[in-house]
Every structure is written in C-alpha cells, then in structure tokens.
Length: 377
Image: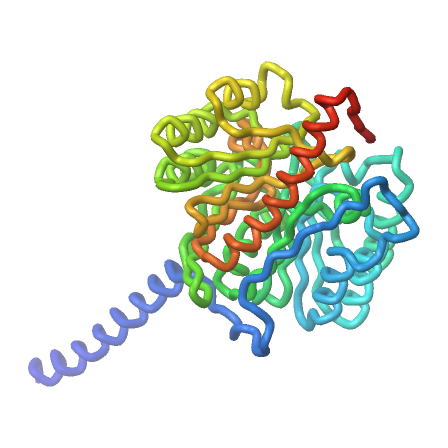
C-alpha cells in the first residue's frame, strides 16, 4: 500500500511543480504580442517636415499631420497618444472617429498644455477629444510630460521630435519615425501604462521596458525612456564609440556630459558637425560656445521659427532620435523617449535631413556676416 501511495503522490507533486513554474514564467515573461502588420509598408520609415519660410497658412496641407490621421484611421482596436503639445484639429477629429467606431482611445498630455487658455486651437482640439469620451490624463507637476508618440493596435509606433501642432508641422524642422514592430510597441505601451494607469511621472517611473534591444527587419532598435533608463549616460557611451563621423541636430544642447563626449571624439580625430537651435544657444548654459571654441564645425540654425530636431547620427549607421533634448531636465525630470537604431537606410535618411538643415544654417551665417539677420517667432 505504501508503494502505491508514493506512486500516486509523485505525479501529483510533479503537476503542482509544473503549475507553479508556469505561473512564475508567465509573471516574468514579456507581454504576449500581436502578430506583425502585414503588407508592403517598410518596417521603419522616417518622415521630416518641410517648413514654409516665410510661413504660408493657406499651404498648410500634405504634412505629417495627414500621415498621422491616415494611421489613426486604420486603427481597429487600440490607440494610445502621449503628446506634449497638441492643437491639430484633424488629428483630434481622427481620434474622435476612432473612438466612435469602437477603438479604445486613451491620451496623456502635459498639464501646462491642457490648461493653456491663451491658444484657442489647443482648447478646441482637447474639446473634440473629450466630446468623444476619450479619457485624458495630465501630469500635474512642474516638470513636463514631453513625449510625442502614438501606439496603434499594439503593433505600430510613431515617435520623434514632432509635436501634434500646426506650428511643429509646417514651421519647425521636425522628424517622425514609424516603427512597425510589436516589440517596440510593447515598450512604449509599458511606458504609457505607467503614465496613464499608474499615474507615475518623471522620477516615480520604474525601468520596466520588456524589449530594451530588439531586431526589426535588418535594424537593431534600442528603446530608452527618461528618467528611469539613464538616457544621457547611454547616449554618451554610443557617442564615445563613434569612429568616423558624428552629426547632430539639437533644439537644446546644455548637457555637459554629452558635450564632453562630443569633444572627446572631436579631439580623437572623428569628424564632427552639428546644428543647434539659435534661440538659447548663446547663453552660458549651452554647449554651443564650448564646442565652437574647440574647433567643432557647429552652426546656429537658419529656420526663422525653430529647428526642433533632437538627433545624433553616428558613423553613418546609427541614429539616436526621439523627444529627448540634450539637457539635464530631459535626463532627470521630464518624461522622454530616445531610440537608438542601427540601420544604414535610416541613417541615410537622417543624413539627408541633416544636409538640408546644415545648408540653411550656412546660408543664415552668410546673411549674418553681411549684416542681414532674419528671425521670426
């Protein structure tokens, strides 16, 4: 009898062990992923604004806003939007349409933006979203929720320097990158849930990215969120690994550590070129004068409105981009994202944009040398 009992108990204990192991593995595993999007669209595609200088409001069409609207109109199940600045009526209308056809739509924004009474377009856009029953969460704190991303059906992410505003679309230099990757979407989904569901902003957030480094087609994508992922430290490491070329476009460049990394590679013989947004570049906080004095080929931008990129291109094969300005506030206080992508095609696209911005900066420098300075705000 004892032998029979042992034989009966052993399988039972084995079943219990396997069940417990399954629970542990499920708890520790990344979230289940939807199937990748089918079709002929590229897995990673970069888009850039084409600023109208001087501005011509009657020609505000065909921009990034219409591309985002088309993506939102394809949403079937879920849409998450986290954006710092927001006034595009057509994007708000697309979000409302998605909600009306049964898509679960949620939004996170910055309190200062949501309560901005000085710009009627901002309030109109938020009213359109609210009227559709879309829940909106804002950060309620001094630092800023600075993201600019949208997640569609857990499969696609749009992110970059581009705020969802008319000015960012038609007056400022900006980028937006679409990544068709369930893994990258899951990374952004975790960040969104911390903001929306857990009400964790800034330093309260935890490093919970499920796929920090993944392959998307032939590209390798590293996803970083601030402040929890020590973004400036990681970006500095990648800059210090550059061997041939460093190109950068910076709306704000005040982070001493990043400036030191650039200078180190310049002194090591790496070819460095950069363009920095003119407003604020001449202050003591900016890295502009320090880089210029060291002989780095750095220019002030030539867009009379603003050059809003936050980009590093390394060795013609690595691109770092996102909402992350090169500042301590971005690194330590704000809600930000930075993607570091190893892909020669993406690097080529950003290098072409760099050349356009650099040409405009050089033209502005020549005008300034001749006593002609144009600046509009």
